[in-house]
Amino acid sequence: MTRRARAFWLEAPGRGAIREVELPPPGAEEVLVRTLFSGVSRGTETLVFDGRVPGNQYTAMRAPFQEGDFPGPVKYGYLSVGVVEEGPERLVGRTVFCLHPHQTRYVVPAAAVTPVPAEVPAGRAVLAGTVETAVNALWDAAPLIGDRVTVVGGGMVGCSVAALLARFPGVRVELVDTDPARAKVAEALGVGFASPGDAVGDRDLVVHASATEAGLARSLELLRPEGTVVELSWYGDRRVALPLGEAFHSRRLTLRGSQVGTVSPARAATRGYADRLTLALELLADPALDALVTGESAFTELPDLMPRLASGEVPALCHRIRYDREETGPGTGAGTESGTHPGGDTGA
Image (cartoon, rainbow, N blue to C red; front, side, top):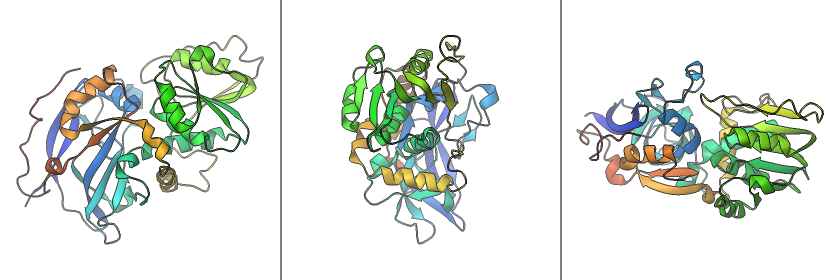
């Protein structure tokens, strides 16, 4: 019997489709996962969807279980939660997180899945990859008790950073965004909120995650002398200009990049990727993080949904994808019809 599944593919920039795929039987120390939820990371995934990955970043931007190559066709994604149906006894029946693209079922090495703690709902666990980015950023930033910290950019990553900073003793956190609707998210996370023009200055640390030139410039303005901006934004193929000829040198400011692709040097000697992801999943026990999931759609809607997410027509932090039982199917036999969903392909 042939095992079948369905996966979302970027056919070409701005156009996605659902393809039928065949699954190999799981080997020793492999697992077959039936997907419950996946998440669309609005920043990186929409840049990929629009074909805006620079050629010199094709290798660095590969997802762990990506198939195909940029700019397309490519199967891309990295926020998946499911149930282990076959594999080592210690994992069968467990809910797990995996850095896998959007697909109804998949076979991966057992080492590639991380069990979700019992106190973390599967629907919230799709945030694990983004909270892991926030953990790494704060290892880089190393905030201290009582620091005055601003997060510029209230997207998925920025809000995750703000949520973790809110747990630090005595740290005063302000989330800054141009969208006033982010004030409700900030309130749910337990942090302050301001528009860029009203943001409080003289900050010890600013974490920038707006992916805009104006946001990064404003981040530098908000620092106290000898303060630090930790840059989390990824700009794709865009160039960014900064006012480094003004008070940047006289105020001895620091601009530092952070990226989740490597474990922060501050912890690399004692923590690995698995440790970091396990910690992220433990932190997701906090129900306040539900505020980061701002929409949900069925898996079959992805070809129509992705252009709307990329254009901003559907505003989102994390948009959750639901895999209904009838969509995932039994996993064996002839499976569903191959090709796209009934609506067909959709252009951007």
